[in-house]
Length: 375
Image (cartoon, rainbow, N blue to C red; front, side, top):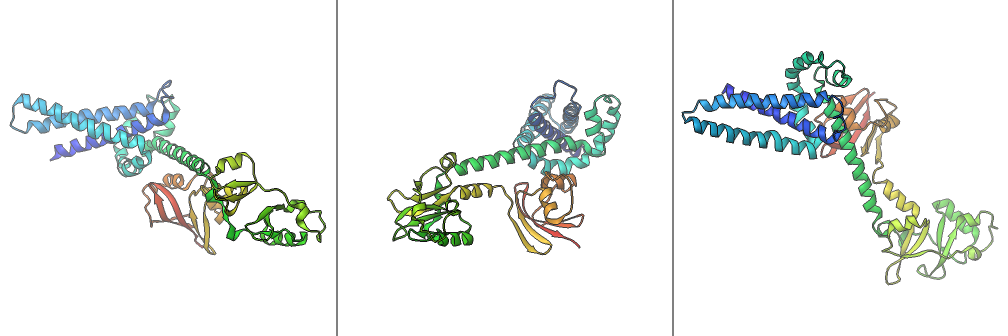
């Protein structure tokens, strides 16, 4: 039984170090191979050592069975090699390469963190041989700090993917047509062509809109638009007829990106059959785009907020006045630094004078929290 436990422990160490190796190589992209890379060398050494010791104990385990020497050798080679290739190479490398955050949270923080006590004496013993390598002494030699390099890799990789996702969402968003940005005709503020300048000014004060469609008799009978900027110096009793401009008219399948490229501010939108649908403004398109990645903040009481993604320390400080760290640091990074590495939905975390309740997660990413100030 003891032999099986040792074999499992050796394979587990090989599994974890193999995953670290894969994640590290993906992040570094071979850029540090021009200098002594102690972290990678140590990881490879631990991996090889664990596999070799596992092979020795696996051989001892096979010797307990009453079978021929040839069959023993065959089983040792076939079984152990298969286990190593699958469990210690293919699986951990695949997980760490494609899902580095998952690998860190599910395996390293929960298992390797405690195994680091086993490796710590080895790092201390090796330190005198690597004193010229600042990376080794600063990043590796500290109690349980062998996780720091991979933690840095995970955070960088996560935010690289997050930024790429945001850009992809924005591009796909504005590559669509303008239908999703249209303000329907039932909500459009319009003015009659026979209105006075004072009427439009009053409407502007109420709505704060710059442009208004102008109709003749029916609201579908649009003859132009009026720009409030043209009315600033006009006589308030004048009719707006002489200020009416020819509108930009678009069909609803017009690309939103093309609308922005042409620097349009306002347009009247019809469908392919000539039916008036509503209006579209540059401001509305930009507002929808920025809503993709701007936080949704809802104040639910005097000292409590609901915040959707993204969440950084700067936003928390802005709302509460409590400084937790660098403003650009996201909440995920901050909690990892404070050793909250396996946070689940419903967890309540108290830091400084704040209580953070995790309301929802998307994978390993915290997407929604409740933030409370503790008095």
